[in-house]
Length: 240
Image 1 (spheres, rainbow, N blue to C red):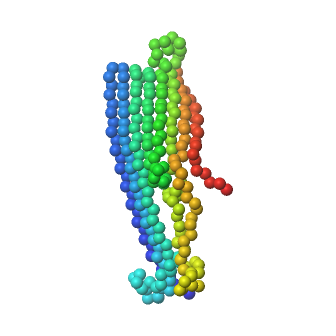
Image 2: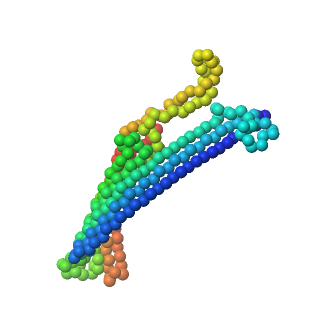
C-alpha cells in the first residue's frame, strides 16, 4: 500500500482604513450638520497543497525525502480584492420643526470589470414636526407630538464572486494524451470555466419609507407606524 504525505501552506492579509470629518453649526433658528468620510479595504489570500506519494518508512519530516510529487493532485490558488467608498451627508433643521437630510455614497468594488467598479447611491430624508406649529394645539390638543417622515434612497450590492468578468481556466494535469515527440503519453491541458460577464455591475434597490410618530397623554403613550416599499433592479440570478 502506497504511503503519502501532504504539505499545506496558506497566507492571508487584510487591511482597512477609515477617515471621518464632521461639521456642526447653529445660527438663530437654523442648524446645519455635515459629515464626510471614506473607507478602504484590501485583502489577499494564497494557498497551496503539495502531495507526495511513495513516502519511505524512514521519512522524518524533510520534504526532500518525502517521496515523489503527485502533480495530478497537488494544487494552489490565489485571490485578491478590495473596496473603496466615499460618503457624506448634509442635514438642515429649522426650529426643530422642518427637517431635511441628503446623503450620497459612492462605492467601488474589484468584483466588477474596471469600467463598472463604481456605483453611486443617493438618498433624501424629510421630516415635519406638525405639533410644533402654532395652530396645532387648537387643532388637536390631546396630541403632544406629531411627526411625519419620508425617505427615499438608492442602495447597492456586489452580489457575485470575484473575477467573474474574466475568462478563467483550470489547469488539468495528466488527464489527456499528447501529440508530438511524447505522443500517446499523459500531459497537462487547460479547461475554460464558465463564460465571463463583463457587463456585471452593482445591483440596486430603491427604498421608500413613510412614517408617523404620535405621542398622547402627556407623553405617556406613544404610537409609531412605518410603511416600506423596496424595488430591486439589475440583479444577477441563477437559472435552472
